Length: 97
Image (cartoon, rainbow, N blue to C red; front, side, top):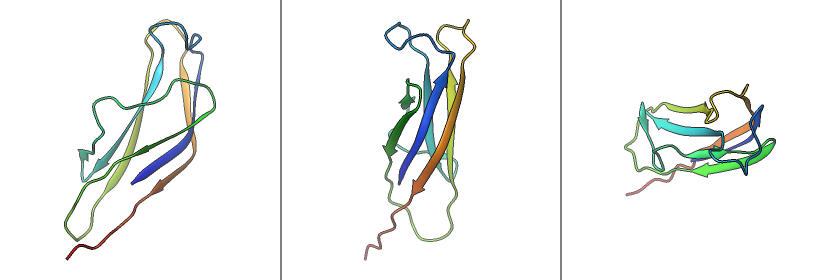
């Protein structure tokens, strides 16, 4: 699976300032997070196009895919907002014998 989107953070301090604010993205298959996991930073910039890829071998049948995102406000005092726009989720299915 490949997930890509235009992502933006607004109200964040400049990205050269540490700690930087950021957006996390995770992709779940049947409720379980797919690798890479553990806080995948999707973007720290305004108006950036980002992408991530995940892969898992699964058996046949119906499956549920979810994409979740979260804003992390490191400064804890800024008025951080975010947008995830113009997104695409591409799923490749390959049959194995």
